Length: 366
Ligand SMILES: Cc1cc2nc3c(=O)[nH]c(=O)nc-3n(C[C@H](O)[C@H](O)[C@H](O)COP(=O)(O)OP(=O)(O)OC[C@H]3O[C@@H](n4cnc5c(N)ncnc54)[C@H](O)[C@@H]3O)c2cc1C
Image 1 (cartoon, rainbow, N blue to C red):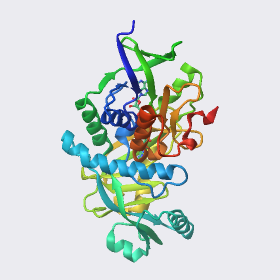
Image 2 (cartoon, protein in one colour; image 1 turned 180 degrees about the horizontal axis):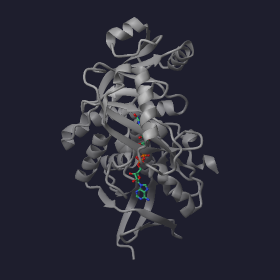
Image 3 (cartoon, rainbow, N blue to C red; image 1 turned 90 degrees about the horizontal axis):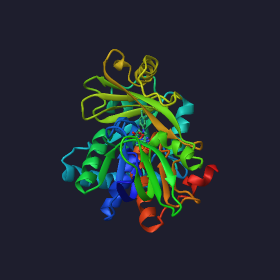
Image 4 (cartoon, helix red, strand yellow; image 1 turned 90 degrees about the vertical axis):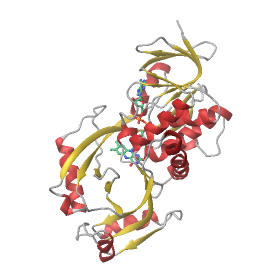
């Protein structure tokens, strides 16, 4: 028996689902959010938290710019409204090059991006900014403003905000979906009675693919695991963060250096491993040799949602306009998340959005 009816059900309380609920309720539309685990237990709570568009190419680029601008707005509203410090800040960053090929790659990749203030620095200029950086570098790209946030605090603040505004959050696992003859949806939950809804948003991160089995559509999302170390090494990276070849290190407001990461095809396993710890340490030491014997205070692992073409999936299905999807943020899901949530909320509210979302169509895998 259905005990609850809701016009809109959102499944998944990661950054995409929670911002969808946030933008809907901001527009006066209520919804129910279903989350199987404590808020922030997966990638959206354990990411590194860098926010930016400068490395992002192709159709993701305008989406990332939108994400950056929405993050700024969230940073201006959420701390005052919820009392939670989301630790949003801008800090300089340096992308390091250890050889000519890496230098050319950095310069090539950044030269299209007029929005970002950056310039090439010689090693001596870099050492005067951050003496701990390896003396094997041949230089680096300096980016004056790189944003970051504490992703766990951001999710907590969004969670508090949507609750204060009246969104009902059900802590349960969706285990099935049925499309009724009048196009309404029956959402089956593991421990509580099913829900009847007009529209549903699938924002279950790497777990979103199970929907494909329930309604017979292709939603080919895969998990890509990544790990991060939090290290105690006082006195370094106070003025800038560093990155090199997909690895990064930054002094976070908790006083620890957060450094990562890995890309591991390990299915849905979210456990930390010694192999990854060693791999991350090796890359961190390459960037900052003195980090070698520093104490590892914490190691985290989580899984990113990855689509076959590495682009997000945003929108509704041609055959099922009442079913919306927001997933596939991969390595940029924190940056893109609020833009994805905003776009889905606009599609629900007015059936249109001002951004070209054709490249992100859920129907592209049919
Ligand atoms: C190590 C690492 C570092 C990262 N760093 C950055 C970064 O610096 N910047 C950046 O932009 N991105 C970063 N990312 C990527 C980013 O974290 C992800 O792309 C993003 O968090 C995905 O958000 P999501 O909402 O799609 O999914 P998730 O955060 O995975 O949320 C999905 C939610 O759905 C819930 N769920 C799943 N199945 C069900 C079900 N059946 N019923 C109910 N609930 C369900 C889950 O419990 C989960 O809470 C990083 C990722 C990793 C792994």
